[in-house]
Image (cartoon, rainbow, N blue to C red; front, side, top):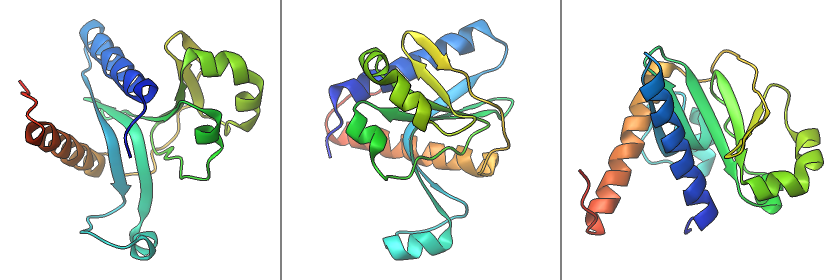
Length: 166
């Protein structure tokens, strides 16, 4: 499935956001998109097998800082996307819903009412709701490996499309 332009724009905004935070703090932070989350190493499996082995979903964007703080971001660019039954991977110390400014302005009341306790809401205009810190639902060292795997797949895809990556 091809990503919508708004989704790509929000991913780029999140990459810029962590880059800016990295340049203004002592702590570094690094992100990845479309990270498939499992609680242990697996090879290719069916959906039925995945439920048995600890499949935790696929997070739209996730970052880990050098002090091992995990931030998970679920990007939603439409209300049908927000209302879908797809797994929302709130696995980090801090978890965020990320939407466009327009979606937030139009559906603020409905989204706030449906947002789980402790989940923050972020738009390019800023915070609508700040998240609460909690224990992550995934081992951070394992997550770093999953992020590296996701980024390696993205680089390979871009290279196969002829995109020069520095």
